[in-house]
Image 1 (cartoon, one colour):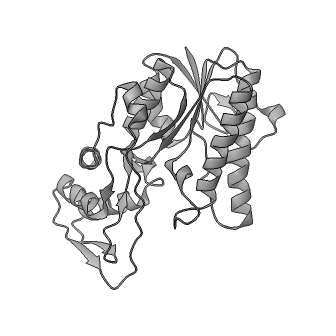
Image 2 (image 1 turned 90 degrees about the vertical axis):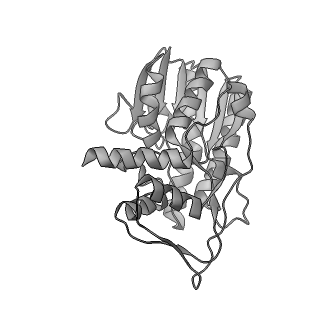
Length: 282
């Protein structure tokens, strides 16, 4: 089996490579430092998938910024780029497309976290599904929640988690704004990589949420970091500051039931992995 990962320098690709290499030949595609040049911003005429690729995984995306230019680029990459990629896969006779979306695609306009990124992810799903259904191309769309991993390359994805771990490592007090103990859903990147590998091996098609087993509150995340780093930090709520809104999601085990796999790494385990990594790096 030959697999091509589009977004070849992404943090998810870094986690995917060692898992996929256990059973397949894997190539990376991107604008630089990859096996194959491929940019989702290029015209379709310049987007070429190598021959004899069985599966294409799309991990490329822009996180989105405000203003016209930011919105334009977000839609150009996350929506139109995905449509062009599907067409390139058709031309290359790819047998299976795995599009990594986001659980934020489910956000409603009333959510304080709704933005160009979440909207573009929803639109990319709809366009990819329409195109692949029309052309009878097997497609899997997964919506991971906020993923994180071990090492500095994941700081950009989850600055909040890393700021808490930084303070715990330095025995500094950790402050949370407001009185609301806001909840989030964090899934470890290693679990996401294993899930994608199983999707490919078992040929699971369709659209699925990909969440950790439970939402966690800011205080639970903080306590897990303090425990992992054996820290003297103290958690304090700044009650005179504005509350932080929740952004949790309902549990959905449909994908895990099909794969006979559930996420293995809890927030406590994830914090311990990062603490061990930093200790060994000293």
